[in-house]
Image 1 (cartoon, rainbow, N blue to C red):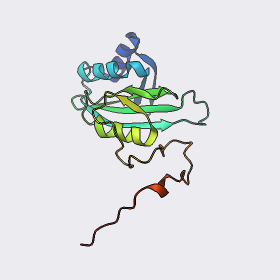
Image 2 (spheres, rainbow, N blue to C red):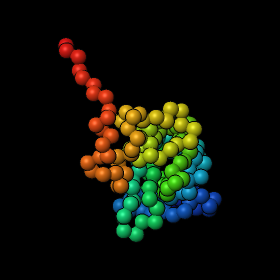
Image 3 (tube, helix red, strand yellow):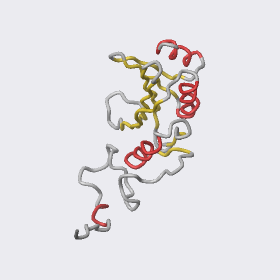
Length: 166
């Protein structure tokens, strides 16, 4: 069973890693968008990361020192070795698309839909990429930093749904 340091070293030797960092015992590995799926597969098959805990996104708009607009974060866990690893991918407009990891971890399905719905990141070959929290008529992505706090008026045109009497 490989340690996190050995796993990171193996990924670095293969040239798949752009950067690594460790903070308070948590290791983060940054890969290029086109290498996300192959690296994730390797982490699953070769290093035993059998559980995808979370997929989320960070909007770095106007963040001091940030070079990229969006950062996807994948939280991986190995139930055998009890190890965690964070896989990160940075994206910039207009190319906000990466491969879906649903073929590797079914748990990615709804989490990728949530990121798509709220941030507008597209996942290639996702089995059902559609909004999960907001209605299809809602055209914006409200967790982006440039989305106005009061909205853009979209909510006023959505159909009103009333509860039936019980």
